[in-house]
Amino acid sequence: MMKPIEVEHQGTPGGGASLLERTNAERDEQVAALFDRHYVPMCRLAFVILGDHALAEEIVMEGLLKTFAGWGRLREIDRADAYLRRAVVNLCRSRIRRKMIEARVHAEARGRAPRAKPDWDPESHETNRLVMEAVRALPERQRAAVVLRYYDDLSESQIAEVLDCSVGTVKSQLSKARSKLEATLGHTMSGGMS
Image (tube, rainbow, N blue to C red; front, side):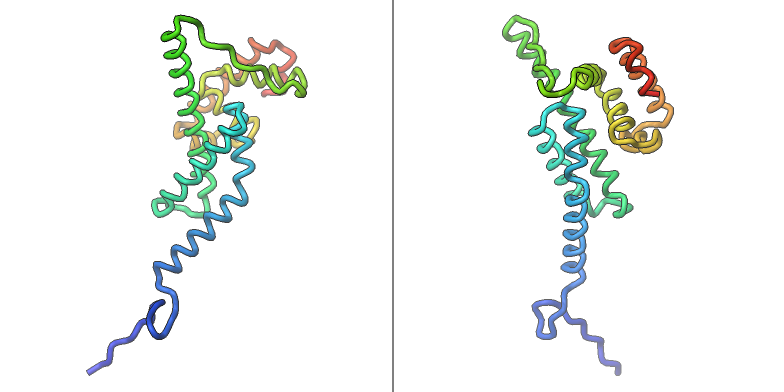
């Protein structure tokens, strides 16, 4: 009769970490590395979309929590940054929609027009302020596409993955956004957006 093979686990006399404990430790290391590499760039991305530093940080932390919570469902762990970027962009878009609804409801409740958004940072160059205002005035999907393309420097296929749409839709959204920006900003800015 054969003797069964003994497997040692942490907490047992022989020591050694269990598979689950090793997997959790590896996951925690990967999430920490993801945070270290992508926290600041994701905050900048969220700020460009939202225009609010504190809200951008809040969105990125929420995106990191979603990424951590869904870690076991990720098919390609080495592409966790793409999952995080999608989460951040989608959370930004949701926040924009929520703010628009809240502003409309408050305005209706008070019987007046929504309050104008505050101006861009006074120390910033006038051109930057005008461009940021024009980008923030775009519909949220076009705004996200423009920020991902021209700020985050993603390809159209990468943007399609983040926005969960086709490349053709990305091209269409970028084309519409460029037309609106050109109409808003005039011909002086259109040369740099092609």
